[in-house]
Length: 412
Image (cartoon, rainbow, N blue to C red; front, side, top):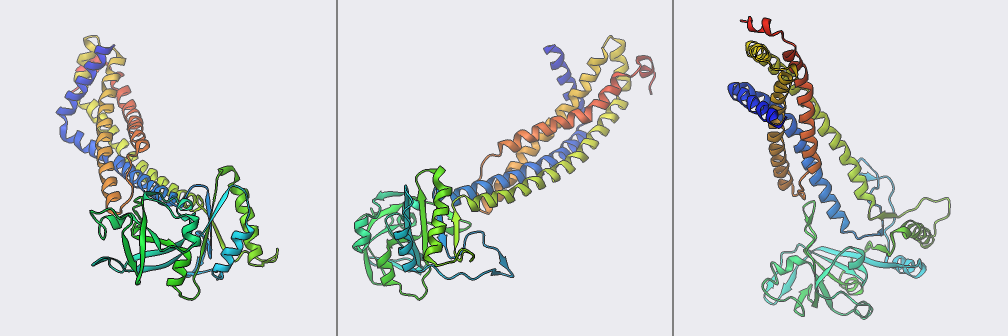
């Protein structure tokens, strides 16, 4: 049986070589469909990985109270409803009243995104973000201090002039030196560096590593712009308590805002998994689009492959008659042609997978998505090619096996 399969494969390859141009065109037709399928699925997979990585940085089992939630609807570029900002007194009142067990609350605000940081005689461009934070900010935000230490309650309550830097500072301003215990200057105020954050990369092109964290009260003293909007984040130790903790926080914030039971909430509450789930739902439509495009193209290649095999059966009628006259069984003839179809289909699939992954990788790299090998797309591509081979090869193989040997030998 193994010998028969090897012989059929050998005959199939010989036939393919004899009809090289026709075979190449068929393989390319199949490859185009597979390339479209694998290429789009590769980009979608890279997009999903990027979203998961970026929004996982919000922290596990956390939720954030802001002026608006991440999914607020807009009309004509404007929000449906204008919510009042979250003021500092409101954040402190929330912290005092919110006493849900096994939670950690953090208050923070973005002081500026255009700060200039100095170290000795060097300075950065005015593009550094400065955040006023407390001791729970890094944990609640999914940040990791890889050098030095995090803020302590003592640092925050005593307004110590200390700071934590993003990883980009080790590449430029403080390159080739140990930044811990060095003194930097922001707006004339000196800060001692106590920690460096782990690199986070970019979120849709915006670097998360060019920022400085300073104690919140120090930031409030340095940056006195009116109507500063604060953010409150809460981390829950156990995921199963998250829903109840969110409900409790909503009730607490409504009390802080003095809202009646009939009034809509005038603040936004965003869970760490809300936005990512929303966006990942949208990517499902891209998956469907990939399959639709791929199936339409592959349907055309199925018809082309079937026509080529029918032509091949016609051209090799005398050969089939000779084989039958020498004792070849119907099943042997059928397997021979079916094997030829299968080889062409898999060659098209292989070429399509290589091209699809290459194009997907190129696109993912250009738009800075997190590339990952789309194993599901690769497996799907070869399964689809196998199905194409079965559909395209069955009828020609059956037709070849049913040829009458006498009539076949007389065929001109």
